[in-house]
Structure formats: C-alpha cells, structure tokens
Length: 196
Image (cartoon, rainbow, N blue to C red; front, side, top):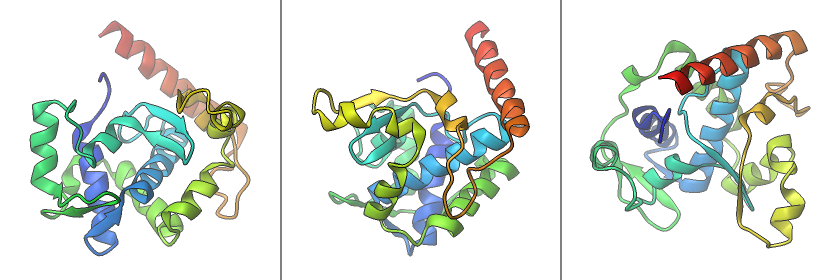
C-alpha cells in the first residue's frame, strides 16, 4: 500500500512489546499505535506508520499493522521477512518479541509520540483502550452503522483525527491554529504523493 512504512509499524509493535515485558496483547498494541499515529499527525502533519485506518466494533484499526501480528498471507514477502526478524510467537491474542527493536527507523518526533502514548495509556488493558477509543470522532461517526451489523468496518478519514477530544490526558486538545497548520502540511503531503 502506498505510504505504508512497514519498518516503522514493525518497530512500533516491537517497542511497545518490549515496554510490556516482551509479549503484548494484539488489540492493545493496535490501539496504542493508533493513538501514536493520531498524536503525531496532529503535531507534525503525518502519521508514523502511514497506515490506512478502519473503524471496527472494538475501535480504530491500523489495517496493515494488524496484518503484521496475525500474520497475514497477503503481506508482501519483504514485509513478512522483515517482520519475522523482530516479532513472532503468535497466539490468538498476543505476539512476542524475537529480537530487540531497531529504534533507528524512527525520527525523533516518531519516537517521542509513541513513547508519550505508551507512558500515558500503556497502563490500560485492551478493553479499556477499546472503550476509550469509542469517544473519538473518527470512530463515533460510524458507531450506529457498526451497531446495525450492516458491515464490519468502515475506512476512516484521517481529517477526522484533527478533531479535538476532551479527555483526561489533554493530549488531543490543541488550538485551532496549531491543528490548521498540521492539517495543511498533511494535505500538501497528500498532493505530493499523488504526483509521485
């Protein structure tokens, strides 16, 4: 998929697993990656992973990042091979580290955001994170459709990640001016990608 950075996704999963003793619940990891992508997008005009997001019953899901912890047969050989160097030992609900994370793939801002999200929300379990995710506008806009069981997922619009959410950490409450600047950078980058 265009824009997806499989190395950053794999290393995000590795970093989070390492912070939680080497093994991590898959849903918890995916929710923490979503929060880190959301935070980075709002601050710097791009996500960390470049993944496509879907609203599903348990909240936002980074589609291809989730495939890395299944593992999914539709991953490219390059993505599969790289992923297997770092993560494996999959069970139905968990994955484990195979080797230490390579943090060199991250920019300073990437690392700062994923670390900040882990420090702020890493103490919540997967179900608490799922419930927490249901207050975010990018998920709420699909809530009634998801509850109707008409379909199991809807592609999210990353523009909705720029909407403020008033929650205890205050991480997602930014000034309109700051959000406008980040959103402009995001849209400019999207236009450049279309040309390339």
